[in-house]
Image 1 (cartoon, rainbow, N blue to C red):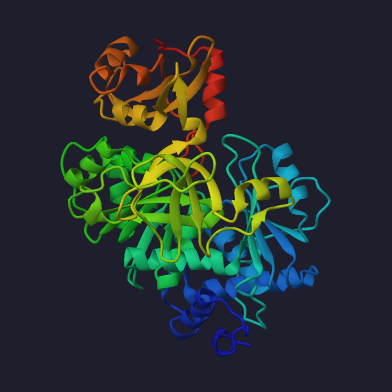
Image 2: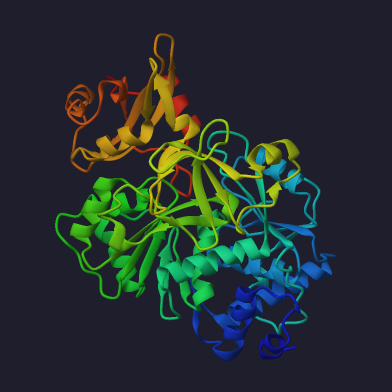
Length: 505
């Protein structure tokens, strides 16, 4: 059956986004879908390659509902594999290929897959599960009978980053995975003419969300791995004719900090920042240095398949520090330790409810019961809402602590540090202290051609922070250890602290 024929006869319960993807492949096969450094894919070729993967999976005995682990770091190998799994009716289980082999093996065992799909440069963990190499399958073939998971069927298991503990497998339905993308595409006003650049690894929730969001609008994704700074990244966006960029706050900081004057990139109209807190100082710099770019600040969770709140550009000044309003059909509210709803302005744990919330954690009924209840999903993030429904995130539970009986937010300390001219990047953690209980410890990366003097920097912070929030130590690093989605790895920072890094006050 051709792509066109398959588009006319989608699965009876086919997801709207996936059915639309098939129709685009049939009606506009040459329309740009995915671009890597090595290869460009139109929608027709991309779907055709997915069909090849699906056929190979069926030959290995994969049936609807079977789990398939995806181990690939190349954008095309990963994203084609994901589509191929769904065409075969399977459940995609993306894993972080940079994990140590032992950790990766344990996650594969937990996933209990029928097959492991892997990139040609990656050796699968020695778990005894059959594996297929993806790269030889990146050839287009006719689309046979599709068996997309239904809207309420399990479609993906996304493992959390595990920055503060053991990764948990988030079980998501097809409707939640693609429903998130459709809502975000609408919030961004995307069209088939949009082309977004990412260098976040494709196996992270954010990478998957960016691709599906563009697919929901019939647009295209440009994926290039690597670190880009200042004009170098803007040059790439211009060369690849991109209309937008999607990444973490760290990406935006690395772009605007080195810029000395305003830069205009033809065609670039929006920038999406999500995954962590976007410093207010960076927002101001972006508006000044990238005047033609509309900045969208977003807040997301793996447990909702990606984005949850969106702060549009026209609210950046009035709602400085907010992550925006929840996506349509979703609600976010703050509750106290007893689960009672708090009024606007009062800080508590943020609860989320709506159709994008996960089914639960893989084979972990205790964690599922602790996180999901009649009031919704307990995010573990603390913050508040305002009377108009906008959300402010103060940080994770561990980001808000007491120092000698007084509450301190690590986010507040980070915001103050990033306003200092010699600081390019930073992270703050709560470290145990025998006298005070916990104290904030700051890790900073100097800006280009700058020298950070911890004692001098600490003194200057006294004019920006209450005494209880002043860092007890400031550690100078060459870089902040972060996940591929841009989040600081707290466990690694604690190890550095115990190891006695240089430049400590």
